[in-house]
Length: 392
Image (cartoon, helix red, strand yellow):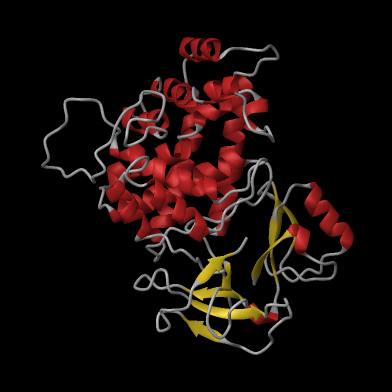
């Protein structure tokens, strides 16, 4: 199967997986031939991509860190909870960032019912990840135009858990970081719609308003003692930078992975949970389409993460992140940049933990986009000079 953007699917082509709207409504089963009318409806519902049948990729099953069924069910629950939170604080009148903060401080914070639901989602997602055999972090692209924050929260949860596992955090810490990863952007629910969904660049005033969202999220979450203060600090500190240039408090980091026997600093610093979250949040955001830009392929997103290491992101933690995140995940498509097959398009067939960035690929198209029906596999682990470029 191949993951194909809806705008590239042709009438009469066959699905390879089920197609859902809103994570709950089944639109088409696997093996269904999509008509032009079907495709119009799928596009109308805001679905961005579909798993499609392609004889050249028979037997290939791209999967993310979270299994498809768990991700689909839990995304619907998170979306419902986020909508309830936003509705509770909705207003038809313009409201300043300070007024919004005061309204959050005056309220009781996240309700027991909503938190219970979200805690259940975090636990089931965490269990699903830990039951899997993979030690790699592979987020899936955003499936629908709507529900970005729910999708983003679950993928950041997954990345934070994989980092926690890499850093040998215990089960209690892992549970806290899972909830914090999912809820780190809760403060975005209190922003005006024109800031969240605006298609152009934000004005200076809108940027200042947007930079309140870590404070909004922290104040909203910390009032429920079951959230945990360190979990709430993931919302508060995930936009702080190692060099002190971040917001909202301008905290610094150490660019190190904290060791348990090291003395505790007497000055405020970015907590390690938030440092993990900052890396994963940035990476997942870069790989997601936004109204003002296209999604980046994984290799380019990782290049950005590397450039941010040291100044913005914790250097040692970035090194750990790079050791669990493949540049070319299974099912992603690439262009071969040199050698005998320069200019050919291929699909990533297999990635091993030992050769994380040197996958096994299968050629799909020649440089003129003509299909290559012959099965040609290239194992980059034994051909180290071949270079790839990720495609969207």
